[in-house]
Image (cartoon, rainbow, N blue to C red):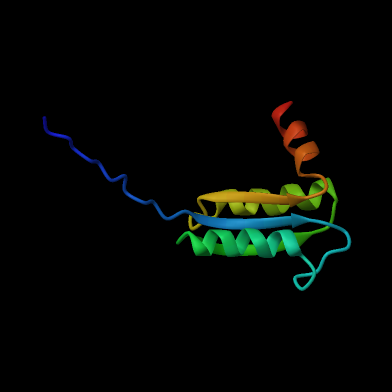
Amino acid sequence: MVIHHHKQKHQIVKCMILTVSDTRTMGTDKSGQLIEQYLTDHDHRVIAREIVQDEQLEIKKVVQAGCTNEEIDAIILTGEQELRIAMLQSKR
């Protein structure tokens, strides 16, 4: 009996990390720091990391900019409101 092992090719994902917070700075953004560390530890690339105020129009502007940036494959949101925002977007 012959057993074939297939090794799945590891794909590098180029990411943007977006923290939604009225109080965090780059120095105090623990969740953004942890996400960045996890991604880089697993050979992914962080193209951009930003903190945006919890204002729907500001969040939308930054997310749209990330979506049109051809260097970014994925946008990861963290902060208090990311689930509410995702729910609002999915209803449209």
